[in-house]
Image 1 (cartoon, rainbow, N blue to C red):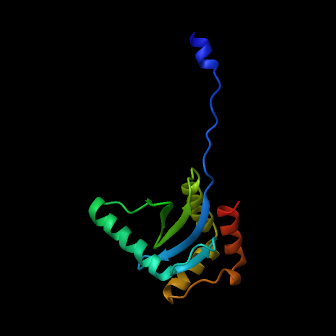
Image 2: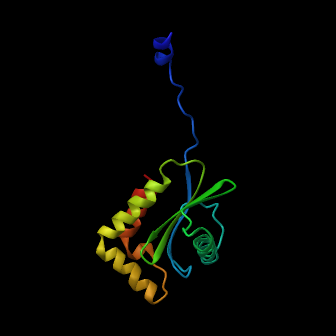
Image 3: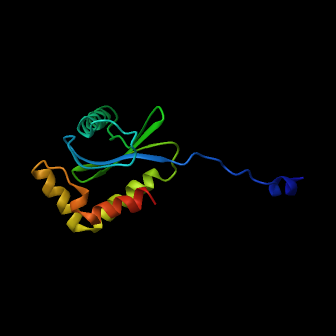
Length: 148
């Protein structure tokens, strides 16, 4: 009987694939330095959203002694990760077992590329938004990590 139970077919897990909405890199003050919108459904101000994420993260640090790393708001999930003085944020719909890994892959790639990391630092100093079209290496990295 034990052998039959062990040999029974394991049902496939049917899960909804994630639908990327937006990817942001924000400063500690909430300024979005870089934004990549993946969906036409995203119809929200990146500046306001960056401020919202910063406020929630600050609140989380004060109350729980840890920053926000994941939150679910209805059908949207937000994953965040610290990168020096920046926060990397990814918003998507659906389930994702890989979202946190994608954020980690992006931050590792950014750390390895000193030129991209210094670009973020320079743009943060002058409070300017990074245009992906001017930095094809950054645009390619985002596409590779989040849309692959």
